[in-house]
Amino acid sequence: MHPTLEELLSRGLVLLDGAWGTELQARGLVPGECPDHWNLTAPERVAEVARAYVEAGSRVILTNTFGANSLCLAAHGLAAQAAAINTAGARISRTAAGSAAKVFGSMGPSGKMLMMGEVSPEQLQAAFAEQAGALATGGADGLVIETMADLEEAKLALAAARTTGLPVVVCMVYDSGKDKNRTMMGTTPEQAAEALTAAGADVIGSNCGQGVEGFVGICRRLRAATDLPIWIKANAGLPTVEGGKVVYHTSPEAFAAHLPALREAGAAFVGGCCGTNPAFVRALSKRLAAG
Amino acid sequence: MSDFKALSEAVIDGDDKAARAITEKALAEGADPLALVNEFMVPAMDEVGRRFECNEYFVPELLISARAMKASLEILRPLLIEGGREPLGRVAIGTVKGDLHDIGKNLVAAMLEGGGFEVIDLGVNVTPEQFVQAVQDKNAQIVAMSALLTTTMPSMKLTIDALQQAGVRDKVKVLVGGAPLTQKFADEIGADGFSETAPAAVALARQSLGK
Image 1 (cartoon, each protein chain N blue to C red):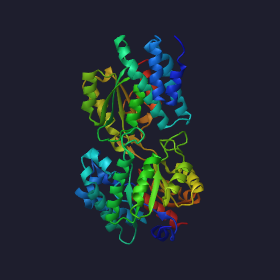
Image 2 (tube, rainbow over the protein chains, first blue to last red):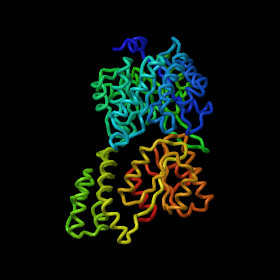
Image 3 (cartoon, chains in turn yellow, blue):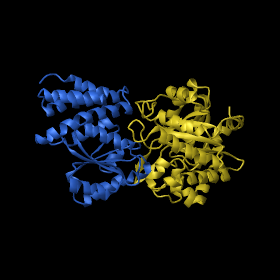
Image 4 (cartoon, rainbow over the protein chains, first blue to last red):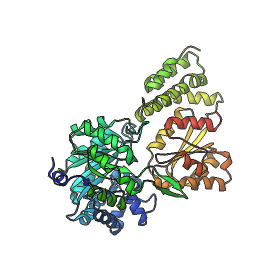
């Protein structure tokens, strides 16, 4: 096991952070604006989010770089700044984390479909390699490839991320099928765990796509299919819109109530995705301390 | 007309080469283009949708079936137009203002095209004004909006308001979809329909035009 992971896991279950996009919106990010660009244009506000998670008890925080591969950034005319945005994102989180937390650089999907020929494997690998390298330069302690729907794209990102020598987490999003236990492309947790383990991932996980209650079963299936540690970042339920505003209905306490079940199902890292915020991390922290 | 069940199978199996070859053979044998669509292709897409609902098919299978359907329709469409056959309907589709995520939209567009609709793809980050323009200038009968981000869902309501203000709301059916959406949300914003999946969107589009 990578020494960074050994160090983290030696102190028991590892609390992760929560959502970033909504936290940035609370600080003035306009829908449609590129969140990742804020690493260059509003770094202090990004740092506030990072610090809020460290203060809430996250032992690993991510970076504001989910959409910072050159393919996504191109939609905002920012492809040429990919390296700068990632390096800045890693530096912001690294400074906020200090010695209290590790920083894992966030790498999201390209938004292009390989099988439709919207992008080539070579283009994907190049974009992810650039991002991973820039996150490492900025001081990331690890990398997390997340919200992946396509196993092929996840494997290309993993191969690119591994060249940095940092530990790499790979998370798929299981939001399809009647029981929400397949990725959009039809991949099962077992198929993903086996393929990603064989491809050299250090941690296997699942994030986004559904509320926390759906993650216990997925976690158990991942656990059974690999010996690697399991990483879970769940949503705060599915949102509804009330009076023009998006509302998530799972409270921090209700979310944290699932922690024992997730732990029993084999999760080693637990945090939140869409709809969660530092209050959720505090609630998880409290639940963890209660044993 | 002889039996072109193989055309249905080519669509269901997502074999675009076979779909093209069988279509050409059928036409050479004097098959009626509209009958090919209605008797073999539409039922095939219904079967694809059924398999998707049963979790036998997932997005990759949908995409290759839609591609096979499109391969055949590319041959048939000019003949249908020549014969004075109108497409099933004209759909203006796009992701709403602020939203750049187009995988779902592209999938629905492909399925609608496969289902016999003419699709005007407005792309991503489509403003309410652009949707209104597509209705006014291109005579779209359906406005189909997609959002992946919860933060851009309110743009759907703004687009419906803009259609209202432009006086064209009654001329179109508004259909919405996207991962965070629900029927309840669609009702709240006054949409005419919501679909959870791409195949169901085709059925919904047909139904909304009474076809």
